[in-house]
Length: 172
Image 1 (cartoon, rainbow, N blue to C red):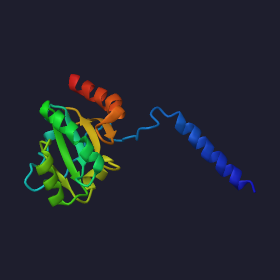
Image 2: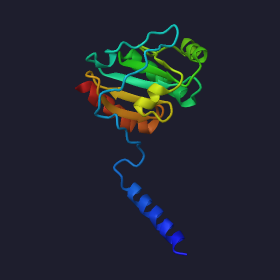
Image 3: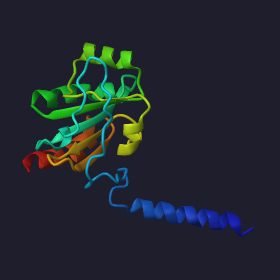
Image 4: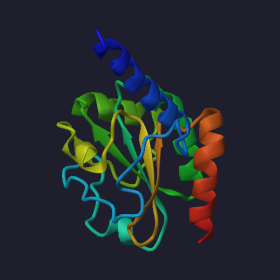
């Protein structure tokens, strides 16, 4: 008899604590403040792979996890192209995708990436803590992850959470 009210009380306490977290919408990342994990050596056929020291080149780099089958990835693609046109370095890790579909997508929509690592099994995505594409990480010139953004690089969340973090990273 007492078990259902106790279970309800436990859920109520969890909900109450969750409402007062610092960022209730954000997913915590164990990678922020840490060196960027390795990225697969495999590259999408016809595209450049990632050199081992590319994330510690002295320049801010975005690491974008994407897939051709992912509608939000398609929505954010114009923003990636705009960042490329501004000279920002972007690595596009293609995850859980068919190589032919990914290559066709980049050929049709333009390639904003300096390198396109190919991760069909999603191992690199797991190492980075990616939950679902698209996810974008800001990595400083020393190879340290500064910020993780889940979802497409569009809309209010992008403007209020990602853009200030990117501006701060570029100002360093």
